[in-house]
Amino acid sequence: MKKVFKINLLPNFLTVLGLFFILFFFSAISNADSSPFKNKIEDKPIKRPANLFNLEESADTIFNLIQKVGAKPTASVNKTKLKQNENLSSALKRIKFQNNHIGKIIKSISNLQNGKKILSSLPVGMIINYSKPSNLTGGALKISYSKTKDIFVWQDVNDNYKSKIYLRPTKLENTLIKGTIENNLYISALKLGMPENTILEMISLLGFSVDFQREIRKGDSFEILFERKIDILSNFVIQTKPIKYVSINLSGNTLNFFNFIDKYGLPQYYDENGKSSKRTIMKTPINGARLSSRYGNRKHPILGYTKMHRGLDFAAPTGTPVFAAGDGIVEKAGWNGSYGKYIRIRHTGTYKTAYAHLSRFHKNIKVGKRLLQGATIGYVGSTGRSTGPHLHYEVIKNNVQVNPMRIKLPAGKNVSKANFLKYQNHIKKILNQKIVLEKSMNNKELAINTHVNQKSL
Image (cartoon, rainbow, N blue to C red):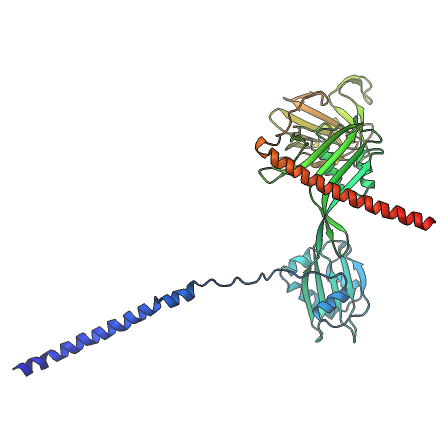
């Protein structure tokens, strides 16, 4: 009886045992998947790949680049410039590259990142250094397609063309320029080798405090400290940074302004006491001009009778840049009857300025455009009712023309008390840079004079 009972229970026992093994198997797999060892492997940080777009530095000649990449040796190197209405293909054809080589060169450049875009936007005047291929030597090109980058194209030992983009090495250099004003500030600074964009920046900065037509005299002096970005290979200046410091001496009265970054990360200028260089509107929106007609009644030079002159006239050569007298929005830009080519800028709810008789507008000027104070807006001309090239300038207060020389304009924001100590330390740093450069300039001048004296002996 007992034996029969056990035999009847055997199938059920085997079923339970089978289910137990199945559950144990899946449990083991699950535990393995969640084991501490595996988590350790998955959570291990993956090493960040190297930046594939970091560029190697370019070299000054094709021969040096050939050695750098191990290309097929080249013969003599020549130079040409990309002409108007030319692309690289037609330029290579002009300098006698064979069609099959031209096709391979263009294909090689096209395969670079943004290669096709680069080929379609090569600038007129771009320098092309080249060595033509022969039976014994390889073809090569060095194309300076931007201020900071070159494309190098070469033939390898199997006569295949390869291309690569190289970064032109640059350096930042503090520059101090000191000079005496002969005729006007613009021409004097230009003669000393100051870049034009830095001159215009200086004029814009000083234009809030200086009347260029009435306050500047022959013999007045100025100095300016700024940073230049220099191409090491060509030794050319490719960019200038915002002015760090500027000083002007007007008949014994000295004005100093220092660059200090505001809380928005923008450069602002203040004197040594932390007072802003800015006013709502500049006194004069032009440099190198003579005040030829004041605000008030005058005999009109064309109409012949006495008429109210509701602005200032500044006589200047055609093409002289005209600046926006303040931050604002272009309200009108076009022909305006006797005013000729005319621009009006709205600065605040109270003030507007107008500029008339322009020869042309700056390419960026259009109605609704927001402008920063000191931006070039147009150029002196003699359009409309005018006897010669000059700028007619108006300041409009509550829609009525007022005398620009007599209005009192509020200043910009000064350095806050909380930042004043930081500003003073910043000034000391700039003045120390100036002292170092002055010593360097004096040493160079001394060396030159010593050499000249020794030569004369």
